[in-house]
Amino acid sequence: MTKTPVQLRNATLGDIPATVLRPSYARDRLTPGIVHIGMGNFHRAHQAWYLHRLMQQGAAQDWAIIGAGVRAGDAVMREKLLAQDCLTTLIELRPDGTSAEICGSMIGFLPVEAENAALIAQMADPAIRIVSLTVTEGGYFVNPATGSFDPTSPDIVHDAANPEAPRTAFGAIVAALRLRRAAGVGPFTVQSCDNLRGNGDITRDTVLGLARLSDPALADWIAQNCTFPNSMVDCIVPATGAAEIAAARAFGIDDAAPVTHENFRQWVIEDKFCAGRPDWDRVGATFTDRVHDYEAMKIRILNAGHQVLANAGDLLGLVTIADCMADADVLAFWRKVEATEIVPHVAPVPDMQPMDYMHLIERRFSNPAIRDTTRRVAFDGSSRHPGFVLPILRDALVADARLSGLALVEALWARMCAGTREDGSEIEPNDPQWDALRAQAQLARSRPAAWLEQQAIYGGLAQEPRFARAFTQWLDLIWQDGARAALALYTADM
Image (cartoon, rainbow, N blue to C red; front, side, top):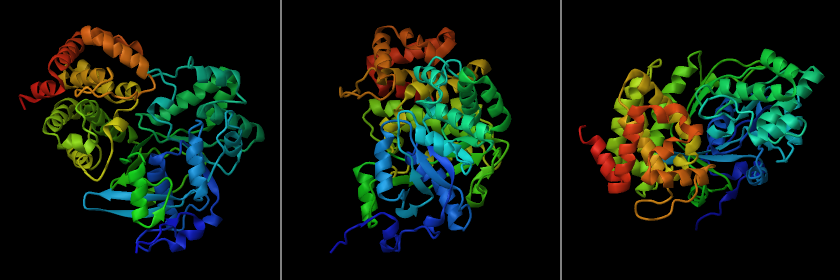
């Protein structure tokens, strides 16, 4: 008879099957040192895990995480995690099997409020020395065309006018730092853990840009005292649904919000922490002054590589990234774009050449145990294409290098945003700017240049004849003969 899964919480940790690793530290003795904003799956499988593993060694007991969110939807996650004492089941998906571990480095989750009063008060506590974020690539209020802080965003305009009652994470950070300066308790480090090249520099620009709108003297104090380390984060973490909850139950655990992840993690961090930090390097993180090189390798080969796959895969009805890698046409397309148009614009890092990293990513993407959907990877293309793909394309233009495949990637995205797959099925909205993207994609069916006229995404690329010509030819071909025909033509000379 199958045993009933154990409901996950502190009191039941001893009842969880011995095959599952559990916290060896006394969670009731942990004290907070980090507030993390954006308590999604990636954070719980990545940064929270590194801290948990450090705690397993008896260290970092005063660095526990307090979770937070600034969106109404974060309240759902808060309810789930508080009901199980902020414990999370992490399920590692290897090609040859699975294993599970209970992560206990998070000890609280703040109320999700419109004016973020609880979040501001917690960050103002002198015990908090790091405020970290995973708020998605598009959550930093950056103009995609210029790469600079955008002070015209409605939420930023609100926070500048109402600094004591902010809507955004950055407004709350500025408000908390104002209280800390007034109380004389010193600054904290603001640590982005999102997939942005120069994520620390971007975070600094956003925090300072917002602070200057309401309190220039505070902005100067932040610039002089706070630190914003750049970092590179890497672990493939699918969304949680019924299958993931069932996977936790198969390990004997009733967890409302388990997380599955691949058997790979990497965290490369700039060692710039104004108020101290955990010794994450003791559990596998890398501290280096060459973060930008690691970032470029990962963001270009992995993140841009994801966009190479996702739009083609969605158009063709391929559900997961592993399905894309198992499709001969899509795999050939990915390999050629990577090897001939992306890798040439990536510098090596210690112990890793770009082509070797490409082969590593191919193995990771091909793992059939990872149910990472093309829909998840394609989400928010209006941020991901400007952040991941277009910088490579600009480098190719400057170097007079190959760019036909990158133009095809953009044409596939334009075709996907028209809202239907090649089998006629509907593609549900999958971008914060979906309505505008779809309208422009429909115009581009008869006039491809209309897609490139989206100034906020492409900037001056529409005026680059070599790119515009290639894009137009590919989009015309996709609409006339289909995506597979375009992929076959591109890979014909391999």
